[in-house]
Length: 262
Image 1 (cartoon, rainbow, N blue to C red):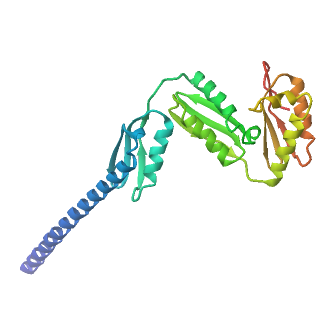
Image 2: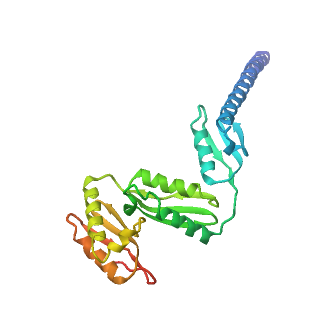
């Protein structure tokens, strides 16, 4: 009986040795294939980032995950590098560790400069008055919020900020107003009513349209800066006089005064 058990043990041991000897070459082959796969991805990604804008970007690949390191001059280049890599075949993921270098701009100055640029963004396209963006900056990280008339207006605002020197990162929280012919009618009628008022006509001289009109599902919000409380009140009256409007929220600020909601 003992010899029988010994025989079984020897046979089982031989089976394990055979299994291990068969498995190890298979594991080695898998590791070699994975390495070759990563090398192919690295070659492809490196070729994709051959543009001079990415000259200081370094690429590493492991198990199909691409890690980007190095430096770029503006945030838009960092974002472009990541987007390009995501689109490459067989890339399972991207870890973007690229650092944005370039000039240091203090947060207050950076916010002021970007706000000025955003005010005049899309001037000439007919949608400027219908965009209302907010902007905050902390340690070079810019957070954009507010409402955009459409996706093109949103993309334009994000692109403008992303290409500005001193911006380290961009957090996009802009909401795009839903497509609505009824809201489009209200927008146009609101613009005619507000900018057509004799007391408010002076604001139409500024291509940046200081009075911003956003409309969502018949609800109107006024933002921007006016010279005095009387102008704010007139804008409120005109906005409420447009047919089909459910509600008007007047967030216009009076120059030199406190913010007051009507």
